[in-house]
Each structure stands twice: as structure tokens, then as C-alpha cells.
Image 1 (cartoon, helix red, strand yellow):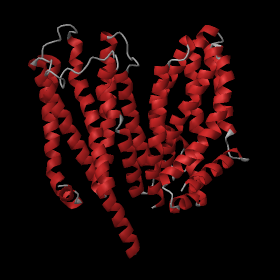
Image 2: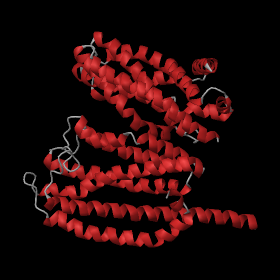
Image 3: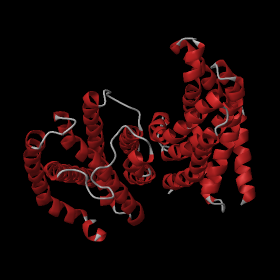
Image 4: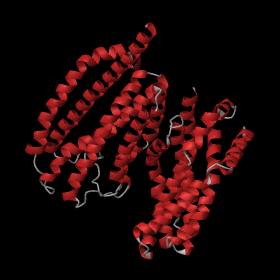
Length: 241
Length: 222
């Protein structure tokens, strides 16, 4: 399957129509999910209206972890099978993941100020999420610093795989340490503790974030493929002249 | 193979303490930066006793960062890195030998200097040797992670800031457990569980850092 999708020409053909579909899907799901979560879904019994920020916060957190996992898988594929497109995918995913991580930290801070009474608390979940954001930044900095692109891709892939150790730490930080952040309420033993009236808009928002990631990823990858082609063309023209 | 590892260890140790080797610079940085702490937080002994041990860890971590930029850069420029790669001994072991040499060259003196600095930070006298011992162990973790970051950024001109960005997230676990162990030591003497966590972190980074660093170095040379 990897080999099938690793062909850049095939990727450009498929993404030419998959990108608009993902874009429309992301906008449509956001148009449904945002009012549903922020206006229609019931306010929280104890936290009141402020809990609605979770519809923006929780999907950002999920996909900040998910995108890094995706990058680690792509990096592994790029290192092992030397698929250039896997490197392009990992590189294009990083800014989206960093943006989601930043969104998660910022919205969490907005929610924490009225609910916990503090904008920031150095507890395990918040700190490990901040470390994840810094890991994204370091990954992008390494890509930017090395001129030779194949070498940059390999080194960034090695860094990405090493940084993956933080992902289970973020996920399980609320279980391993006594945390101010609430423990997992959806993916936990004994089933979800969340009422369907909140769960449904949350899942719609999660799908919206996923679609937005897919759209931004493909747009970034297409731009990178075009940039490489332009560079190759410039070399060819210079040789011919 | 053992001879090759020992040769790399001796060479790096000699280079570190040779003229221009730069092993003394992080020491000076450590002392100088730590001396600024009472100037920022005020000389109140009670405040210093609380913030002193953690800040020693911070300045030690930054001091460790200083030496990383030249760690592989010089070897890459003069071709000795190619020689290491051609050697029949595995690159991972040779990189570990370089890290061990750095640990002895920087970590040992820094731990010694840390003892009077800890006393100056109002650490109780019984806890000062523990603070120094903790820093010695912690520097193994910093250097293990630092080898990896330095190897990733080896080809980059003026890579010092890049190395810092790459490595600082990996400094979080040893800083957390190290500063916790130092604070506990100041409050109640040797706390074996906090210290064990620090040692475990150091072993983790000292074992895996050279493997990651060797993987990154191979990319520079291929």
C-alpha cells in the first residue's frame, strides 16, 4: 500500500480532488459542530457555560497527539523505505500539529483561568503538552536549518522518532501523576463517562479537526511537490542554456 | 574494539583539557550564572534555600549546552569523524566513549565546584555533597541527550541555538527528577526514591543517546 501511494504523480492526481473534498468537509463540519457545541449542547452541570470551550480544546489536544503519531509513522516509512513522499508528509504535518498544540494550550489556559483560578499550572499534563509543542518547534527548526533536503529529511525523521517518547507521557500523565487536569473521561476502562448530548458535538468537532488536518496536509504536500518540481526545472533549464 | 573505545576516550579527554579545548568555559559559566541568582532574587537566605538547589540544576543544564556545539563539529571538519566511521568498532560505542570523556572532563569538575556553590545558595552542609552527586549523575543524562542533539545539528553552521532548541525538551525528565532529589536532600537528607528516579533517567539517556547520535552522524557522512 505504501508503495502505491508513494508515487508523487499518483499523489498529485488523487489529492487534486481529495483536497477540495477535505476542505469542504472541514468547513461543513465546523459550521455544524461549532454552534452545536458552543450554543446548543447543554451547559455543564458544575462548570456551567465555560465548559463549552472543550469543544475547541479537546479535539485540538487529540489531534496534536494524533498528528505527531502520524509524523512518527511517516518518518519511520521515510527512514526505512526511503519514500520521499513520506518525508514530505511528515514535514507538511508539523506546522498543523504545532498549531493544534498551541490552540490546545491557549484554550486550556482560557478555561483554566475561571475554573481552576489559574492561567497556568505546572502539572504533568500541561507541562508534557508544552514539551510536545516545543518538540514540534524543534522539528521544524531542524528542517529549516539543514540545506540538503534528503539529509534534513533523515535527521528530522530520527528526531521525530526520538520525540515520540513524549506521546504516551502526555496521554497517561493524568493517570501516572496526581494532576490538576481531569483524568480521561472518554477512552477509559468502563466506557465513556460523557453524556451523548455532549459526546456527539465533540465527535463532530473531532472529525472537523481531522478533515482540516487532511486538507492542510495535502495543501502543504502539494506545495512542496510543486516547489521541488520548480527547482528541478530550474536546474534543467540552467543546464540547457 | 576496547582499544579503539579507550583511544577515543583518552583523545577526547586530552582535547577537552588541552589549550582551547574549552572544558573550563562551562565551569566559569556555571559559577558566573549561579552567582547572578542572589542578585536577581535578593540575598535573603530563606528564599535562596528554596530556589537555590533548582537553580543550580538550571545553570548546570545551560553549562552542559555550551560544549555541545563543538562536540561533533570539529570532528566533522577535520575528518576524524570519517575515521571513527571507518573503524571496525561500532560507531555507537565510540560516540558513547566521547560522551564519557565529556562527562569526566566537564561533569567531574562541575560537581566539585557545585559543592561550594550549593553552600553559597544556603543549602544545609549535610546536603551539599548530595547536591553535587546529583548534578554529576544528572550531567550524564544531559550529555546523553546532548550527544543526540549535537549529532543532529553537526553539519549546521552556528548550530548552537538549534542544538538548544532540539535538546531542551529532552532535558525535562532529568531536570524534574534532579531538582526534586536536590530539594528533598536539602529538606530531609538523602531520599533514595527521588535519587533512584534521577539515576534511572541518567541511565536511560546515557544508554540511548549514543545510539541516536550514531544514527544521526551516519546521515551526515553518507
